[in-house]
Image (cartoon, rainbow, N blue to C red; front, side):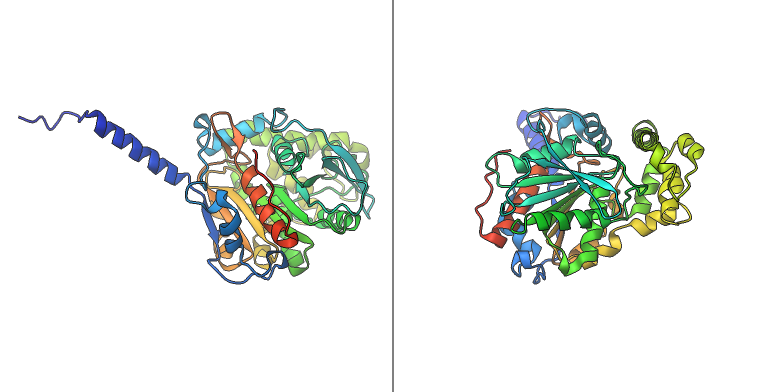
Length: 411
């Protein structure tokens, strides 16, 4: 008689089950590309193509059935682990990130200072036509962040054909604070000035934009404000917090990752910023409540005491609503690629305006199941996944703009 209660242990059956599970897992790790199915683009740099057509032609890491997949490092499955690992590697130096910058300091029209860290070294030749990627970090970040150095090295390595200029915000990345104005997620003025400056310095070079987290929000908002007048040929936003109110609530939630990692790190960064620049900030017309700032334990408190007060807003929640880049997405006329993960504990999946990506033929969203916040580590030896998609995307746009050869990938 057959024992129907006994487990079936045929090795062939077990192998088929394992293969089926692996395939299901691989399917779950595929890139979901959200964009308008077709339709002409108004962006000159794609020469009338929709971004979907451009990506399908030249970006296999985002569209090819076999290549468009991001399987996370086995011990980094889950958004919390990816995010934590990204934070732990902030100052790590390895073969992907070990570079030296050439710093340029730029005084802005109001007397404020930002710095540009160039890789490779800044060219003295104004006729240099190599494309320039202008990069912005997230809150409290700088050019020294691991993911920014990795991207800079990937695009700017010898023979690649790109230059990278990482913009360090006022008072960040060892940049002196020379005016009382502080950067925030809503203000696009500094980035606009830097784009104009680099465009004037290298008039023949295609300009490209990359933003991470808060920097991605500023970049997205800038592109929507500029519309068809944007001087950027293409842009990539990584972990963009389109809905800043949702991001604020996510960061304010009582979770282990927030309480032990994100909040202490971000709050301490802002406090050090104020202590380091106390002389100039104490003379600010904003009249900050220093005692309250130094006692703050949450970013929502900091944003109410500092950012909202700077902007004449009631509290952080009013600021978050005003700073959100979602309302500007419809106005983007530059080829624009957003990369977000569904397990990002900071810039939540629910806040991504997917309907806008389906209606605007100039923009596309690469949505991944795994990646966390500024993680996207894949492979047994963790490596950042999006380096290849960013390179392919920029190649595709630059090729159409100048008929230049594609950059050889050797990541």
